[in-house]
Image (cartoon, rainbow, N blue to C red; front, side):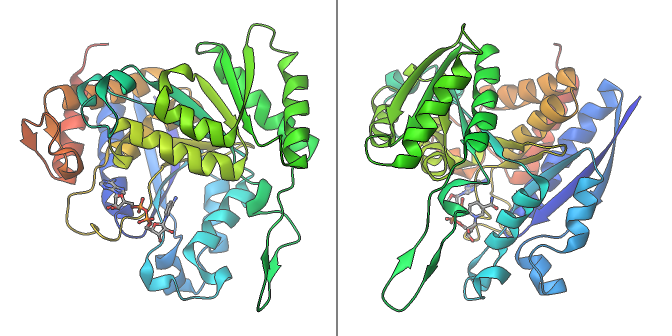
Length: 358
Ligand code: NAD
């Protein structure tokens, strides 16, 4: 029996609802895969501010660093939007990523065969899409100095060092080796000096992976190509802001933002979270799609704990639930046989994941 300590950060809005379902599924596969999970909850975001006055209490960092992995819901909401910047939930999240040193964000965008009609693009464009965005997460314009504003001006700086580019590029090439061995590096090297360095350094790293085909694409073209012909991509390597935008765009290929997981890794402890936010507009109604969070738990099993069989079970459970026609409200109009609540979807996936034959 392998025992793992998982920090749960439920956060705000739909965060608690979707994390509860991921825990349900984890516990279901634990039973059949010979695993045990000890969960420890920690506060972050608006709820942490309300209780402690800080959106990222020190205790949350300490608990996370002492665990095997962090499973994260979502933070934020209008209630906290007027707070000074450093007290806002989003600042807590940026600080958390920095404290944990999770500089590499993996965002798969996969179109499930069962949901090929759910995309806003034509089925023949999105069918078979299976791409991975590797986004640099703790550098670039979101963190660069100088930054500031006065009455008439606001400014931020996009900075990358060779070291930051090298370490994220290695993630992209390593994951490409396990996939179709193609990396497309995204930049704006025709305009930005920082992108010229990015391109130069990615070329250097590529020399260590001769089997991987490297191409470069300007970010504006990449935004277009993702809509025009998304199947051309295997691994997309991006800086922070470009990846933020492109991975949200890529998420829509799949039909709902409620489907897509992510992993943020770097130093020792990784953070596994859906790519969506706290969806305050649907919080508390029991209609949120828990699949992105359940799939994030699967990534946690695979990446952080090396429990591939249990991860395969979860992935199979999600697929079966979709192919049997179960849909949460966001996907209700796409070949649904039965509309289910957040909690029902969690139970259905848990049941299939535990029973599936691999
Ligand atoms: P959002 O992702 O929360 O919601 C965008 C839209 O998608 C909404 O209509 C929402 O109802 C829907 N949606 C999101 N997740 C869904 C799910 N699982 N199932 C069904 N529908 C879902 O983005 P937003 O509205 O721009 O932001 C809301 C709050 O979340 C803001 O405070 C923002 O700062 C925060 N946010 C947090 C994170 C994070 O915690 N990592 C990420 C993005 C945004």
